[in-house]
Length: 119
Image (cartoon, rainbow, N blue to C red; front, side, top):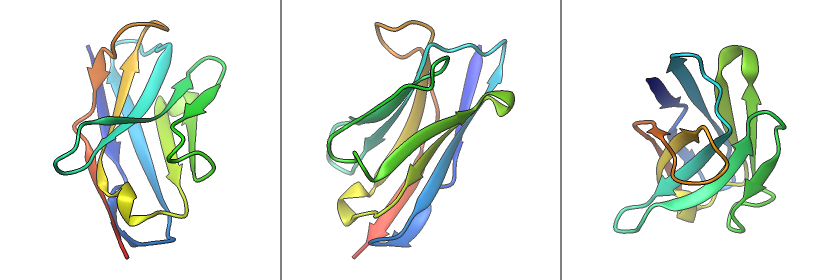
């Protein structure tokens, strides 16, 4: 079983930056894809971006492209989400997720971390 734990959330003013971390633990961790998602109050969960673990290839939602960057530290089994130029509409609970294949649903999810951006 794999456990994912997010950290780094908090409150920031518009235009500010935060870096979220997603630390994985448990059995041998070798995901194919890890992703970031977010859910704002009253809204459905939405995709933010994803990372192909082996190649470090990334893909982002249009709403965050150019502002958010996903990276990973293989030695620490940790994925990061660097968020710059934050906007109030980025306010949400952010979740990381992992799956062992390139297709299908994500198998593992973290508990989420709150990000609040004030104007």
